[in-house]
Length: 186
Length: 190
Image (cartoon, rainbow over all chains, first blue to last red; front, top):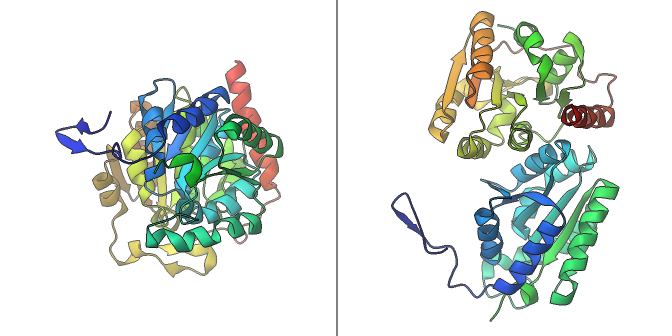
């Protein structure tokens, strides 16, 4: 739990952030139901609960990254090993992964289940997030990546399950955009 | 020291490993020694061979994974060393052929040509064992040692900036990928 004391240092993991715990839990439970056993992540405010839940679950492997593009290689390795995985990242992390997506996942037909926090869209208060918000969907379309805008709690389970099914059957990256309406309680 | 001689020296040891290589000369030379179904050649996505090896090693703790990386590729994803060091799978051996050059695009010098020390970077990143080798004999023994002693190891092999005359082989990328995946599935059934 946060704040977390690790090797004498105190880490604050976004406990005071108004990120939806119940919706994060629902997303996490769906990933488990989809037989996801490895989750790679780079910390992002909206993803704090998801990352913590993964970390605290002894049946799940969490891979903490230095940069999101690493996750493409890690998920490809997991897929080739027969293990289902998911990637947790911010939309800017998706942008940092594009070469890996094109010249590994697309080139070699590797399924990726990408859960991307959609920062910089309507309601964004942080000026530094706004440019990325403008280009996230155009980039997904340009790359031919099927995506779903997840903004209602009722559709969480179905859309994540369907995204994974499509990724596995088409052997390609599929994205779920986690929106402010779903992740933020303010 | 030639990379090709290094690959020949460890070829028999690779028989029961899962092998991931970077693109270009490394992939072409290993294929010239002899392709096996347990070899996967990442023919693009520079920097991600080590990440792929990490994913494989973490998901398949019973298998030994060997990554043949290069200085140019590793320099594009130095963060990978920190991620490997964080999880330090005992079944991962990370070999970096350092020819101080981006050979396949015209031989432009990389930063290792002007003093960057990849062994030092690996060590400082937290990789438990890191060595630099300059001869085929020391390369061979370093790889064998890493495989037998079961500790994450990065081996920097200083090699000449020389490679094959062509990089495209007759093994298609997808054929290689599916064959490699099937090979891993067959291991699980045994």
